[in-house]
Image (cartoon, rainbow, N blue to C red; front, side):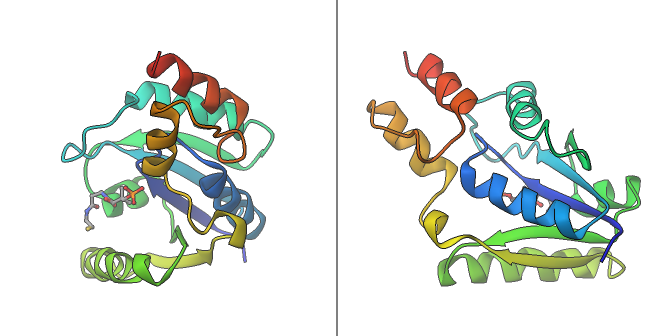
Length: 159
Ligand code: PNS
């Protein structure tokens, strides 16, 4: 398909579920900007810099992925990098309503940018950053859920 796409999220922290979506998106688009949206309404565990550095580490072998951060509207970021697409992952029906709401709002803000949904791999359909943090907090095994670097960073946070 080609073109420039933005893959936005909180990525607090990045999981194998996110990575799966990023890798598959990078096969379809020429350039993918993975952007950490600095959403002030959430109380993140990792700073924006930490989240960027973890994403950079785990995507370093994907040449057409760039990692960035932005405070503000996703559509403003998309315009700033001349993206024509947004990539989002869909895990289950429960994601649908929220995704439909933000996609519709984004289309009101800029109808030149199209949102594409990639169905998450079955093995990650239950996975979220929140669930990973919960398990890591109580010392559970998260090795199947996040890359090694992220696992180590979570251990440090919850030490
Ligand atoms: O990983 P998340 O938390 O599901 O990602 C949500 C995110 C960051 C993509 C969404 O909150 C977002 O786009 N925030 C930026 C603010 C914005 O553009 N709002 C208008 C559309 S609702």
